[in-house]
Amino acid sequence: MPEAEDHAWLFDSRYRLRRHIAYWCAYLLLWAGFWTLIMGSYGQNVVKMLIWWPVFLFYSYPMAYGAVPRLILKNKYLVFLAVALGWGIVGWYLNIYYRAYVFFPLADRFGIARGTHLIEPSSFLCMSTTAGSMTASSLAKRWGKKQKELVQAEQERTVAQLQLLRAQLHPHFLFNTLNNIYAFALEQSPHTPRLIVKLSSLLSYMLYECRTDEVWLEKEVEVMKHYIDLEKERYGDKIDISVNIEGDIRDTFIAPLLMLPFLENAFKHGTSEQIERPWMSVDIAVKDGVLRCKVINSKNEVVPFHEEGVGINNVKKRLAFLYPGKYSLKLADEGHFFMVALMVTLQGPVASKEIKMVKQPAETALHETTVPFN
Image (tube, rainbow, N blue to C red; front, side, top):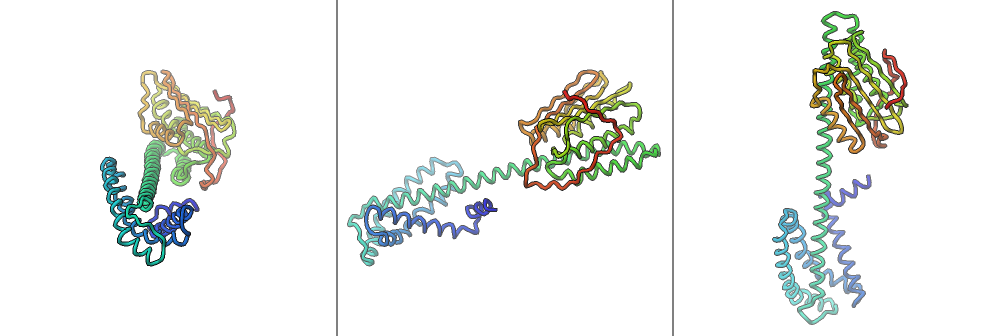
């Protein structure tokens, strides 16, 4: 990519020699052009700049590649200021002696016009601006590289945290599902094979399809229905569950496993602790690129709800990472029921993403209705 090549030219050590050669060629030719506007011919000024080139090298590199990394980048600004003032004095005397013992003899040999004064501000000006420009470019390059490394480190840290949260979510979700199937296996229920097939679908989804940053919302809803089916087999006719879908959930994307923890929490801390007939409602709506998900479950009034569970905490962190400023999450304990209301502004998939997923029709034994979502 062109941008990557530009960064490589600026920061990659493989291009260091070529960078410096290009810099000095451009610098000497520009200075020669500047002095030509004032006096002399361009050819003579090029020769003059070549004679002064060793001084430019000696006077510039210690500041650019010595003082910058050892002083400025380590926040030793006062020391750097003292070094710069001292280096200015060194440059003043270097200018005088170099003119007397190098520049004057070589200028006479090549027949180039020169002044007669040992103290010449113009040559010292060239030395100072050369050292200053190289110091500034070195500082800018190192600062840019440091900023790039900080951004990359922050991105890697964010990705690592998201992967950790997702890794924590999978076992937590699977543990409860396996417990349900285990209970049926102990009872030698004929429904066990069908439940294993649904679990296999969930595993395939979490192990393979959830590796991308976003998944089809239609697929996410289908997996939620499979999970509800698994739990409904466990409770049988002891629980009333309604699932309401509004809007077109096709061709819409969402971060994977973002709503499942609310279902898991509803079954684990809500319906399972009910003495009488428990109930649950799940409402999902998509309108104008905004997803609204509401999960309401009955609960035992004497059992308080705790928001510090692994699943919900992970969802909160993932929402903050993935949808900053574009989501709303409300948890409400109303005594005899608990409500979770999630609103997320969905985004289309980034063009560079490859979401390799085959959309499958949702299969569920639950009765769906379309109702307004408040």
